[in-house]
Image 1 (cartoon, rainbow, N blue to C red):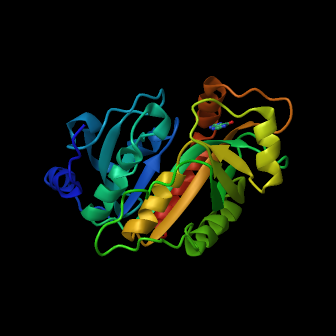
Image 2 (image 1 turned 30 degrees about the horizontal axis):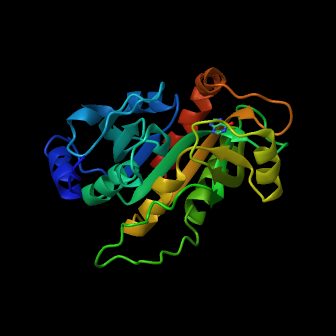
Image 3 (image 1 turned 135 degrees about the vertical axis):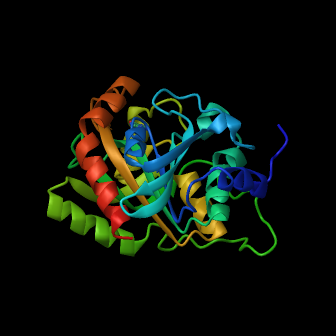
Length: 268
Ligand code: HPA
């Protein structure tokens, strides 16, 4: 498919958005409900945005919601693109570049993930402290004039935002851990041997998203990125994950997940 440029998509959205968003969030599997709390919301389906594709995963609505949330001008992505759907990496990360063009300086990325750390419980949240990328690098072929070719990922997951999130969690009694997220393309779940391997190399959770978006955000200069996983299932040991289990845990954790994200955004 021909590649629509970022400014065409950004122009389309800014002509329809009620505010100029400074904060964006990508809402993963079963977490799109957060967008219901956006005030004066304008909701735009991905299919109508130039350059966007239609998401194909259950639990991913595929709309962009813009308005006021927790006292900030926000754009929320209800659902995202995954590499495993067959999209090119440049399409998976396209919305992030569009958000930057719209003026977004802070990006909060959410996802559902399998817990590898044996101390993590189903329903825990995990703030990403770092990642291990077992997928293709989303910056391959993306070099452009004025941007760094060899991008440092040091401090990718903002230490400042992590500190704020941990303080909120303590305050609100929210089960928030910190850890390393390992990205694999999926869509098959991991074998037991892979999970044992990931455990040994230092991963606390595993999932099929977030890393391409976070790397892309750093590349184009989005100032601050925070990423939060919902641990929807255990993986280390005799566990067989299912998408139903992932969605069920998402439903159960709605309240505290929403509280954490809302308070985090209000304190930016
Ligand atoms: N593995 C990979 N991705 C996931 C998992 C898992 O166990 N659970 C939710 N997303």
